[in-house]
Length: 176
Image (cartoon, rainbow, N blue to C red; front, side, top):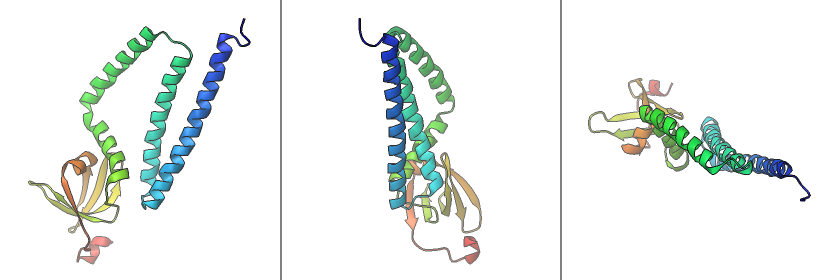
């Protein structure tokens, strides 16, 4: 006979996993906030990326709990394949949502433009010269010299050529 019963070992492993998850969430949040502060990134964008990372950690923790509690491998495979099928069909119908969220995270870490920059989107049919007003999870808000407000999807920012223009618009009303 062992010192701990099987369920006691599972409870202890689950508590340890929970402690690891809490630790990872705190550490990743601090690291992302430090990166954002050094890169002068807006706090609302930082919070959004932290939220996405926390969701990923939570999903991985749920998989860990399933493994700890000894759910049969065939049951795990069946459940995951069913969930993947449903999510796949849903994402196929709404692929742009996932694409824009992923693009938003990539823009957070790797793109050189910030709110307030004037950019030129090199689109053959519809070139856009505008100031970045805000960057959200799915799209970016732009304002042209003429005061026109444009909502531009994040995934298109990764697909199109973008130039950052260091000059301000001559029209002072534009900045109001």
